[in-house]
Length: 328
Picture (cartoon, rainbow, N blue to C red):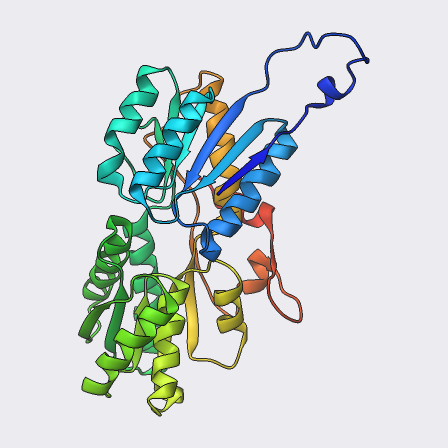
C-alpha cells in the first residue's frame, strides 16, 4: 500500500505559467510504517502527513503490514526514488541493518520510530522503559490510596523489545515502591484485542483472583477487560492500566464506565509531527541525539482535559501546546 503526498511550497505555487521553477528541489522523505491497520500508526501517519503539508515537503508513505521482507523491499524502492531521509517503524529491528547501511552508503539519513536500529541517525519516540516506570509509579500510588492488594495479569508482546521494556519498567517501579504485589501471570496478547481477549480468558479461568490488568497497549488492556467481563467476574474489583493511549480505543475506555483507571500516554499525533521535524533537521545538516525523545505522562479521568479537547465522545483532539511543553 502506497500513499504519495506531494506538497507544493508557496514559492512554487507562485511561479508564473511557462516559467521554470528556479528554487531548490523539494525535500523528499520516505516512511515505511510497519502496521498501518493499527490505530497508533494511523494517527502517526495522519499527523506526519499534516506536518509535511505544513512545511512544504514531499512525503511518501508505505505500509509493510508486519512483513519484514516487504518493509525492506519498500525501503529500497524509496531509496531508488531519491529520498533524502528514510523513516522506518521496524517490523523487525534486527533485520533492517542491511537496508540502513544501504541508505547510509547512498548519503540518505535514517530515522527509526518504535525501536532503534544500529547505525540509524536517530530514534524518534518515547523511552519505553521509563514509560513503564511512570506507569508503575502511578499505579503503586493509586493502589496504596485505594487499598488495592494487587494480583496482576500482564498482557505483553515479548517479540518486540520496546514492549518488553514497558513491562520491565512497570515491574521495577512496583518493586522500588515497596508495595506488596504479585505478578500472577504474563501472557502474550500480540498487541491485538482479539488475541489479548483469548489469552486473558485462559489466564482468568486459571486465576480468577486477578484484580489488576496491565497491558502494553490499549488493545491489550481492553482485550483483557473484555475477558474479565465475559468471565462474569466483579468488574468493580478490577483496575486496568493501559499503555499508549493511541486514540479512540483508549479514550473510550478511560471516559466510559469501565475499570480502565489510567494509561501511559504516548501522543501519536505528536510523534508523527516530530518524525517530520527530525527528518528536516537531518536533511539540513543538523546533528540529532541518538534518541530524539518524545513526551509521555499517565493520563487519568482527572487530567485528561489538560492534554485533549474532551467532547461528548472520542476521538478527542490533542492539545499540541500542552504536549510540546513537556519536551525537555
